[in-house]
Image (cartoon, rainbow over all chains, first blue to last red; front, side, top):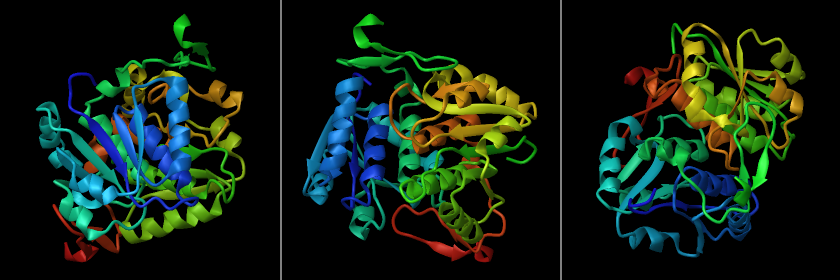
Length: 180
Length: 180
């Protein structure tokens, strides 16, 4: 993802305890599928898990915890994409968003937990539905990132990893990163 | 997805209570992104939620609860794709799997919760990694389905829905299905 503008994911509305696992999955999906940073709304447990994975499997990937997600939204210097089942169809708007990203605009992708307040819909440059069906913010984020990067994120290399998984037809192969 | 072979998703290793939300997201993602059926390993709570969404937002989509996921695997008349971070790279094998699907082979996609036993790796025709990084079975399933169907799943229409979300640049618009 070098030479492109930053892509960050803002996770809104985290409820401590109840949402820990989903928020962790949002952060790990952001990392694995090419985002540069995840910003969590006061979620220290998930932040530690995501940082631990980054230490073991590599980066660069930044985890940030904020007490003011609305401030992050308001002060974002770039475009804001809010993923919601009520939004415009991803297949209709992804090309324009991809052009913004390619032209150097930092992209903030916002994913909510349960209810998202109306000012987020208004603050977003695009409200985007990965289908207009109820499913999962993790699934929506994954498909959106894969489409934003057109699959290039699958080929990215990782710096400063301790370990590395070697793709295998059957079984598991994990090697120290320097022995590749 | 008419005129193509069946695509089913088998969710393995569900732990009641602890995994309810993730299993529900697996099922809703399967539905929203074009699978025909989800098979849950003894998870009645998530099954009810997924059926409720299908009643309200349409189908066809089938939810099945099994006490014998290994039997489902063993007796599957088609190809089995196990999603795992240890598997072959999705970008390397998706074309072949897509051809199997197009030629009429039913596809069973297996997603685990935590540890998946080695016999699942052996039973699978492909072990496939949506990246070889740890992230989320929901994210892996979403990207795999979007690639299997090459985005056509986003244009599918839904039968027998009570309500329908109208894509909007800002705000929420939900209408009774017959008033479209």
